[in-house]
Image 1: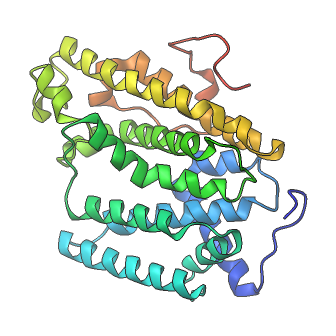
Image 2 (image 1 turned 90 degrees about the vertical axis):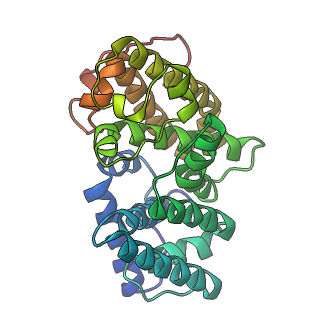
Length: 298
């Protein structure tokens, strides 16, 4: 499919489903909505369908009802999704577009299964990561899989592209974790490796109080070091796709880097204050905290 073509959508029902996915992203993931505006018209609905599905899945797992109700509801969502992927057809108002995109672009079903399995475990109980390796498996399962799905749509065959795409997704999930940090801690959820806390003599309960500033600053610095490493692994991805899709990946990379800078500025204050999600206004006014020549995307 040429990047200059209009998206090929089979029926009014399918078109309506793509519009539902777009509305999901515009309402619940505004920075991604803005980033996709630089995509060619032919590909934008399909990227929104992938992200619309993952965002809606997250809301099913997290919102409404008791723990048991959410688990049962998400289990149904998973089984229905996987069955529809097998048949290549869906009557669900949102999943119809996602199933159409997976079929049309031959997205690996194993990626969808990995995402759903990770989300189902998170729905059942707040994850407890002992090590960064365990945390990274979660980051990969939630958002790395989503970004690897993108690669089927962005005309890429270069070696290493999928690894860089997954690293970018993992970075995006770290951004989300830091944006949600105060709310997650208040709800008893801590997505930081417990080994890092023990190394500094910290308990999860110390984090939202924000009192042990030196230890909390060092805890954030440890996370930033890993975040920086993932960013550097992700950087090549924009050069591994067709030129028409580079601006989109540059935008996502730059957004993640700006949030990295914001956490670098705030350090231990993020446990109490968090960071605001990127929007179309205000973000450009932030001052870089960690300028490094020749690494930020153009």
